[in-house]
Length: 421
Image (cartoon, rainbow, N blue to C red; front, side, top):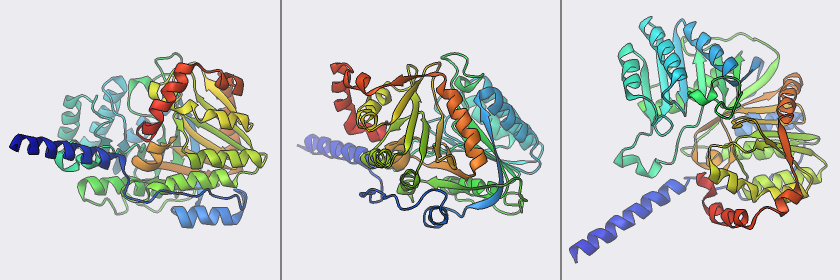
């Protein structure tokens, strides 16, 4: 009798813990965002900068970096040039050659007296060499793992930081899709080396990137990083208007979702999306369908034969049919794994960063996206998008309609858990 009660209690506890990991503390969005004004309208910018996120600030410069051959040298050069502070948050940190280079650069700066603060996700760093972690701590790097496995946070185990943020001396920032792992090395030259984009940021918006890092640093350590070494007065570096947008289940999880819905609802001419993981919920799908009905040209550039999650490949296709029938173009990237997160609206607004177009990013992960409102930058990013488009194969409605029965049945099995993918 006692053993039966104990087993029942244990089973109930396990079910409750699992349920807690599937839940978010906030009410979900329930209604579609209606098109009222274009992305260039002052009202759209006002609502994006006041209702949803931090203010849009002028005077910025954002430089695109393509693949590891450009991304890692730029990040490492910035770290090696640090005079006072380095703050670095990432999801993936795996053992390997690039991990050694980052560890060495951070250690060298810490030993030179620079304050080096690192937040790395516990789940994303499981493949990290523990000896490397200990060496960095011995060098003086203040490194924290986000939400490590403990009994008291089992109910939040599914909440990961997926943000990729680097700030040096409060003046130069980086964000994008890249992780610290050898698959990102090179120039996407083969299936073992992934294609990704990262961005170097200068100007006043870097202070918002720093604040985004502070968000999870405070959650993890209880300490605030402030003062002029972290938040100096930053002079204008260019002409771009931008703001850094963050979201977390601990507060504002649906704000990222709403930001993407509002951006799509503002489109009048074009929506270009390059996404590593595209599993739209009904609201996102309906927003894209509404845009198509308005005559907006929608192009989706998605992973092809190479993807690091077969369940994602299965889950994503179910939603393609209505979009293809409505006139959307879907193009599948062929050379290697596509890990880019990019959206361009009307060749004016560009959203870039760590956020995928799926329910995990919108409801479970801590994410960060930089929104840039600048036609010249949007045009440059459209050229990057179209260069990637040359390496794709089109996927048509007829191909979707004739997909194998096995694939259709797999979709039905996967869809109930798509928020976890």
